[in-house]
Amino acid sequence: MTTAPVTRKTTTSAPVPTQSRYQNSVAEYWNAEENPVNLELGKIDGLYHHHYGIGEADWSVLDETDPALRRERVTAELHRLEHAQAELLASHLGALTPADRVFDAGCGRGGGSIVANLRYGCHADGVTISAKQADFANETARRREVGDKVRYHHRNMLDTGFETGAYAASWNNESTMYVELELLFAEHARLLRRGGRYVTITGCYNNTYGQASREVSLINAHYICDIHPRSEYFRAMAANRLVPVHVEDLTEATIPYWELRKQADHLVTGIEDAFLTAYKNGSFQYLLIVADRV
Ligand code: GPP
Ligand code: MG
Image 1 (tube, protein in one colour):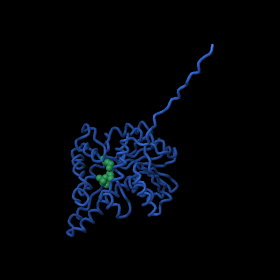
Image 2 (cartoon, rainbow, N blue to C red):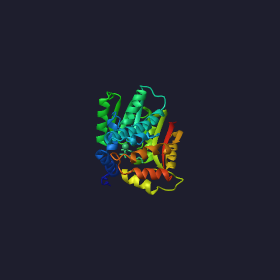
Image 3 (cartoon, rainbow, N blue to C red):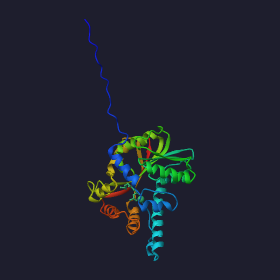
Image 4 (cartoon, rainbow, N blue to C red):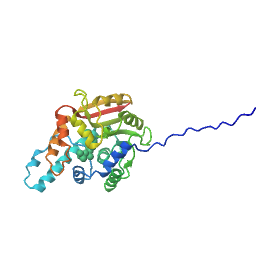
């Protein structure tokens, strides 16, 4: 008896897109973004931040009678408050040495990695989904002559391809709301060495209020993001070997920044009232979470 040869079908996978359609739309936003509130502040010292500010504001800048000087002083004051936020985050990264490497997840135009390098002399790898931001940030590092230690990459923070366990510290500064936290913390846990530090400053919705408020939803629509509830951070960290060691509610500390920004006619983007109302009605919190990688 002869047997007919069996035609074996090999299993083929559907091609996996390197970026989802959602990620493409986020990248488009950041490739096109040129808000004066980011570019004018960054021009002051070449530190381009994509996050908000903390601390008491110097309200006297609003009393300046010369219109051009008033704009200049308000811009500088907002930058000072944003810089204070970046320094607070950097101060929680642990005892880093110049030999250490840090990972900046969702680095924007790169300010945070430079702040960490200035403070610790460490190597930094920043990752952004926007090719334009990565190019811009590499150019600022080159101009500051730290391009040998601070590098920015056009990559996905959920799947960096970087070396496992190679990082002493990592962070997300207001970039967690673009991704699923389970996937994000799995990647941080993979990249961090045992005993490494993870830090995030984030806006989260407040579980004691209920679901996302109207204002939180407006913020989501404005930035094409999806703000997570506070509880989700701790659940997803615990599931990924990240153990919180310090948690700080920065909500009160960020309100002066927003009050001042609201009065900066030359810089407003239209989202200021949503932040102020959300913080004041208790539906939204500005949180610092520091965790050990165990
Ligand atoms: C600020 O970036 C942060 C985000 C866009 C993420 C959303 C953050 C939350 C806390 C909800 P930016 O500095 O580019 O924003 P803007 O242009 O408004 O200053
Ligand atoms: Mg900004």
